[in-house]
Image 1 (tube, helix red, strand yellow):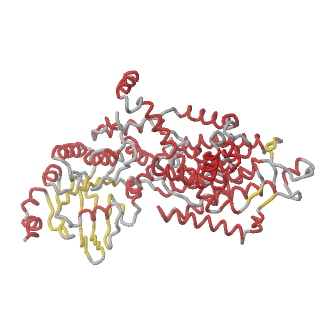
Image 2: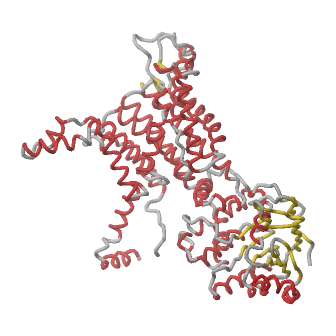
Image 3: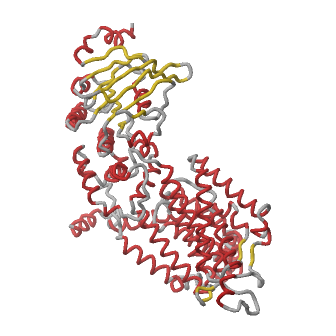
Length: 385
Length: 252
């Protein structure tokens, strides 16, 4: 029975638990300070981004370093939909996904001619090109450094058809048939899409198509000599993951209707790589975990300052506190990147499968009743029979 | 015997200044097992690589069943019914045996590409039965949930053979299917290959081990320094003085 892989849970159960965990985030994140709409929205949005990235990287092993381009395009498309058509979020999301998909088809078609590091460099080059174009030639579309913003004078054709087109005092806000998409409603909108995205990703993992992608990662030669044309499989995976990124980008605009070129910078592409590897590339929930962890660090750890630390360590003698606070202070506040970097190194070195592998090891440890107690293993096996 | 089905005509291939194949002509009868033997470096593997599209010959053409294979993509050649077992097994190391066999099974059913993302793998009952059946044929069914990378070398070869058989190829190319195997495993592989002989597929087999060649081959061609120096039924090839010289004379 060694080497046997058995899924821990059945799929329907996985989706239900995932949905429950996501929808209940405001409750269970409250004690650890993560319960405010802004952060919750980011969890859901970057979760979508990472889950989509994982369909490409986790399944096929092709490491794209340019996924931020699709995130940016999704945002721009969504904001333009708000400006030209309507403040309703549904068209914005549809256009975000659509345009990101088109861009992914073009970039994918060109980049997938190469594999390995050359593929990564090509995608990086295309993304940086998009970033620089957004700042220069495409300024009429992107509004350059200022970023694309809403204005009271925007046409909003569809909205003006159904109402007198007058807006209140300030800028109009995004809505879903009357429900304003900021705060908690915004989070729940993103959360529902996240759950749908997770379900689609799970179906892809379990489909013949997903098996083909895993085959490409494992041995592309064998795929070819088996009679499979790997290029269209790769391109489809690339487009799907680009569309996920476009969806995430449009949701960023839904919750905060402006789009800037910095969203396309390579650091944003790198971030989603970190999220996926941190959580566990090629696993279903890993990318979501990684996205959550990084966004939590970025927003919570970075807000800790010396005052907070002094309070936290107030149970220690004063002289110790004076020593501990500056040292720990290096790792929080603006130094949160340092903590993240250390965590990333530890995980890559000791848990190449990411956090998910860590959990799996813990579960296996407890399933076998702890390696130090062989007797209980037998007892467990007997119980299993 | 059947018609000639595989033709290699005037194949030349050189790497830099080194001529690997020069003016090779080979014709294989349908449904037979054709062995290619020859000393190391004679160009045997290059010949197979030319057949499956891994290498392009400098001149000449390979045709199979009326289709020109030369210049086609590897996956197109495979879809025409040409499968190959490699010298170093090309399998999906990180995947389970059943997954290893399911991929070619899907390729056989769906062709070179089909966007079957909405289906569930667990609902492919028929295909799965077929895959399990093939694994049973090659004697690996007990281990179907094992990761392929943990198999022994002999088992990896048998798995790869299974992956080729589920494609129901019309032409099966085998590159030293028993190299590095213990005698017992070699005999098992011979039995397996004999068993599939009845399925009517054409086989081209490269082999060092004369025991294997004479157990399986209907025809033998001898390749030395990139040229076919002898050919015919196994008995006459064995007694051909040129063959003896090629194998033994090189040392003199």
